[in-house]
Length: 388
Ligand SMILES: *Cc1c(COP(=O)(O)O)cnc(C)c1O
Image 1 (spheres, rainbow, N blue to C red):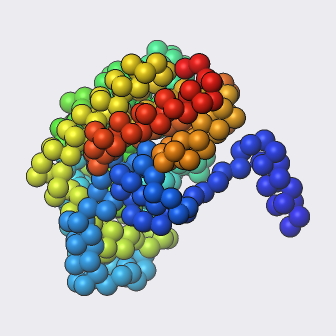
Image 2: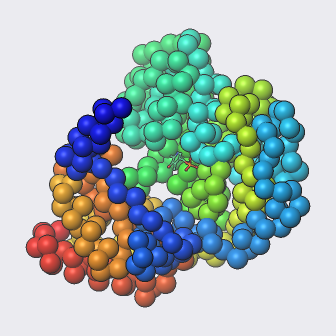
Image 3: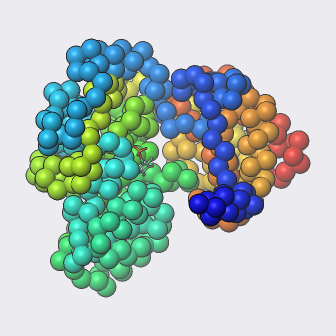
């Protein structure tokens, strides 16, 4: 196994070795990382639900009613009522006939794509799609045709050039590194024209886009026009798990054919209970979503005024562009020294020369928190003598 040491050394030499910090408290606006209290600008906890009292209580109640584990896969040990309730409520929230829960957003993509398309089919996939979409495509054995990022003309050209039994267009809703959004109305139009199904992965969109955070399909007024929506419970919902939303037939079919559903156990009752509480909160009030956007506008405006290049994001994801990877790494380290945890991201996750710090804004931040964060960004830039 000495190759492992060599591989690790090689990653380290290239500056690609990821250092995973130890978090010694809940995911909140501030948390304790490696023994130090720091401002949290790195999580996908958009609405601050990961440690919300109502979700915590709901998880505990679910444990008291249903225990801690699901027992086995649902096709063998049955489905607990709380999972069914969660699926019904998610469907109502998304405005679809039905949903099916999976263990994660990653698993939801692996479950769906190979069940829908196979060897005789074509997948048209945005070149910047998430790794779980890419892996789902690979597992399906369908031929994958990548189109240029958010480029509907390129997509249409490719859709018209290639014929197959079935065509599937798949895209992230919100792209997690740049914070830009898929042009879904145009994608739906060209897909319809060429007889293709549309699947959108709304992982960074739900809880963020649309009224009450119902997601990208609502945001664009496309309810009923996107055949397959994939979601996660691990970002804005603050818990863990994934789901697929669509017609009753789609969900019934996935329950027969999706391998992560058939061969891997369900979420825990606590996860399902907490996710139900998240749906309750979002349906009751739009307040957290509004606060998230208020904070997002505030942070972006102040960072722009301070002269930072914050890219072309239109969502709470705020890339602070720094150029070369070692600069971004040094920047992130200094920020941490000054009490801000914001992760640097470099090649190969983003192109060479486009290294950045990705600041993630949450409804749980106060204006004082954001001001503190911005001050530290300016301080580090001045100390490192960077032009930004
Ligand atoms: C985060 C993310 C996932 C994975 O979600 P998990 O629930 O953490 O597995 C899938 N797709 C996209 C687009 C994501 O951003």
